[in-house]
Amino acid sequence: MESLEALVAHIQGLSGSPEEVAHLHSLLKQADGEPLRAHAAALVPFLAHLSPETHSLGYLYLLEACATSGSNLSDFGGGDFLVTIAGFLTACSADQIRLAPDKFLNVCRVLKDQVMQLIMPIRGIAPLRAAVRKIQSSPEQLTPVHADYLLLCLLAKQYKAGLSVLEDDIFEVEQPKDLFLYCYYGGMIYIGLKKFPKALELLHNAVTAPMSMLNAIAVEAYKKYVLVSLIVNGQVPSFPKYTSVSAQRSMKNHAQIYVELSTSYSNGRYTDLETFVQANSAVFQSDNNLGLVKQVLSSMYKRNIQRLTQTYLTLSLEDIARSVQLETPRDAEMHVLRMIEDGEIHATINQKDGMVSFHEDPEQYKSVEMLEHIDSSIQRLTALSKKLASIDENMSCDPAYLMKTGRDRGRFDGRFDYDDYDSVPHKYF
Amino acid sequence: MDLSAVQAALSDKSYSALAPLCDELLLQAASKGATTDEWPYSVHLLAHLYVNDLNSARFFWKSLPQEVKETRPELAAVWRIGQCLWNRDYAGVNTAAQGFEWGPDLAEFITAFLESYRQRIFKLLTSAYSTISVADVAHFMGMSEEDATNYAVQYGWSLDAATRMLTVKKLKAQTNQKLDASKLQRLTECVFHLEH
Image 1: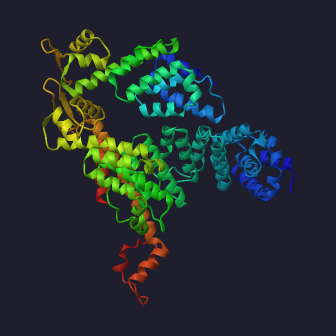
Image 2: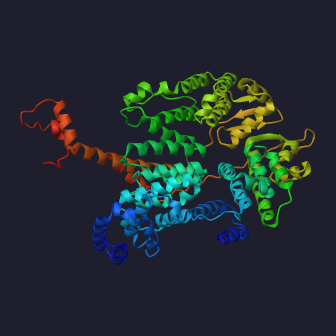
Image 3: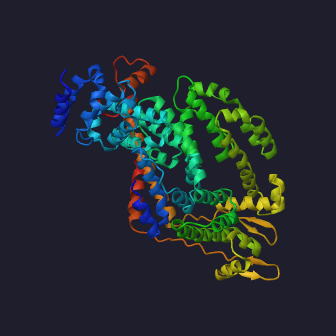
């Protein structure tokens, strides 16, 4: 094995063009492994001679060897080493590190473990945010770093930082576990930001994703899914057809108390729901869902007041208070005011007469802003349907699929029935 | 730690830009492992309240170490404003903001915050009420009854002195309905897509 100095010299010399980098890559692969890790402590000073942007690939190999060498990171000057890793993740060149994705993922994992050990998750946020963009081959790809990044955002309570990664639509997933964690943590971030409809989408994906056996992440996601469904829609929908069989059969058994909560909610009486919540608060607390359950409880007032708008045009504050089980008309007034502020209801309060008048939604869908909104939605849908058409086409050409459908239709004795095969694109002929 | 951008924004009075700026700087500083003793906590928290981003304000407060919360009375005073906003104690916001001796960096920011808050509350009252008592208006806006009446009358509200009730004048909603030619192109693309 070459000496470290020779290796470093290679790295410095061969990081110019893509061909040089490819050559360097094969050299590094030869030098990689236990011999490199054994020299871990000696590697650190060499890192100072390399630049993270231009020598990204070489830097990555050396850094990964140090990070996974198993020795305590404080041997490398603890906190400073973290700063080195952080600096590398932010500054490295995406093209170079994509040649060695496993090593890059290892380094990210080490960073996340370290900041969690130091109980300073906020330190890992900016570097991992950069890392996600570097290793993604396109914004539609899900990587293991996504889940780690969202976890750090949750722990550090930097919920808004998590949004940058959640806004992309994901179309490519490699590891199912990444998807489950991404949907679950993403749902929690949206819950924290009180964007409940978006949280519902992500949690729905976690619950209905294909799974041969029930997994713990999906069960936890289901519990939150029930609670968020109640807040958004006032009811929990039944499982859609595409949900996996194992989920449909056994999911509810693991979340029995949540199912009971949703039954109690649908009866519409605040006091009953309150009693139920108090009786079972220990269970909700141990699931870390007590805060969310309390939000479900307070959404009951909102839901009941909204129900009133379907029956009445005007109603006195006293009647509202009585029907919704609030203490005083003043409470009812404050509740209605709050709902008007949040845009959950269209109404006007008349203090002189103590009445509230309910209105229709004044939106007439004629303004320029609304047109822009509809326009961008149409564009997104068009792009989505094109994507779906191309996925469908690719799948129709897939040999495994063709074999399965051919088998189901029975044997053909070598004859081609053109009518039957018309749906197959003519790529093969 | 380079806080010049924050200072610049404060002196420019570009208060709405402060919150994302502070957030980003904090993340960058944390990744470099810098200590955050001289971090402008009060400014950061108030910046969130200024744009009415109560969620971020709450999480920011929750993430602070206990020691920081206890040793900075100005920060605690800003948080009291935040608590009132969170609990929708509309009047309490004014008392909390006006009842503290603010330091020189924050004094102007607080005044700007109160002004924008007052406008927001007035807009809410305009949209939510058809009639409202003078006492309530004064209560929500944090003004004396006379000041509140004058403010309201300025915006076209009418006062019924006998019952001490104000009748709200609703604003005519401005809707922009002008279309332009590029929409035709869009429409063509859309129909083309539907046909195929």
